[in-house]
Length: 286
Length: 285
Image: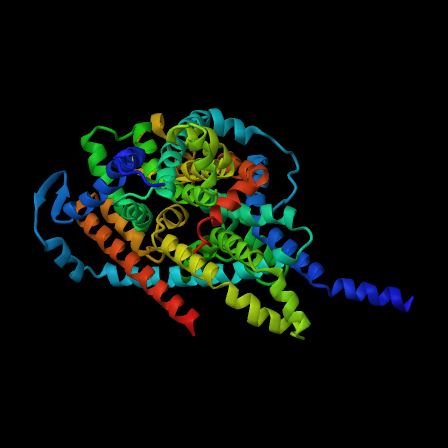
């Protein structure tokens, strides 16, 4: 449809005007505020917030935690999601089981935190109870009081709510593969392993890229889950970078420096997604 | 006899059977934490703090729910706030997105592609980063502790996604439909409203379900931009309970079950829309 007039702009104007106000302006303000010291008063400080980043010893530590957290939760979600999608694709009970598989994805962060904090409660939680009844452990474990175990529980609970997303993406990918491909391969004498290796896997590259991108972008910026589950503790064991940013801005009310860390997080997310897109594309060419 | 046995073995070793068993196992394990908070939410205090765990409550009670709904932190009010925030956000997002996505799908105009790209790219912005300017601006506009602020932030988080999702649904409808309507004397807007809009019902459904759910579940802005119960939503109420120094578990579990109701309803009754929205657009390119 060719319309020369201003009509198309009138159609998109309401949305873009709203987005300019609620998204574009705050994004602009984020950069603007990163040059200020804001704590009650607002003072222009030039680049000194950015210089402060270089000397902030919490940043490397929290970034390392973010990398481990994002990397593990993305890998676990993709592997488990793929396995569940393959099972759902074969199961005659798919209609009924799909709802149960999807559910964790729709559960609010606050409830995920509640469920895992309670499940892994040291004295009254179900995890210790089940493991002791099975005879796998003899004394209750203080899951959320041990630095390493608390970090594992955080990764586990994060993956728990992202696996369904990966499963749905892979399932849609599996269902988009034409059945004729499998039939003609069968006629040509390909066994079930060959069909999986040479038809299923190559056709799942688009869903793989999507799951990789979405899950890593979402988990690297997650604040709500560690905040509600452990508050970043014990000590600072579960303080990932995004949570450190939140604490700087809203616990210590250092909004200017928080904005600078916010710019850094945005930069990290953009670079990470560009690398992922490039990596998967190059890989799919070979 | 031999034949029967071998068909049983064949059935047990079939892909269908093994997949279903794995799925059932997964579902039981994965849903255990949710089952555990449900079980706790209908227990008495004494039973919750027993030295061992009872998976079937001995004396089921709805007291934790009464306490959560009408107690010191009244979830009845938080639920109302959540419905207002999620409902308004959903209505605004549907109206705005359905109109602009149509234009992005149908009209070729200067800046159209760039606009669509900007909408998509905005999803890369980490909400926790934008929370800081949001907080500063909301403070200066005296929007802190209002439902309006929460509605606006939820629009920011859902509108780009909704535009992207609906554009995919419009793209799937052949242009012949528009052309036929125009030939019959409809204006562009009439063609959109009377012919095309009804055809993307499933798309609108997916946007509605997802936007409502995301707004209902949203926690970060809800706890930062709200100070008093007047603007507290359900997810923030649960957060207050779970980060309390002394947690009253049955009450918290009851509140958590109330907060998870929309998720349950949508997953059980609107699964088709939910899953469709979840993966739509994603697999086309």
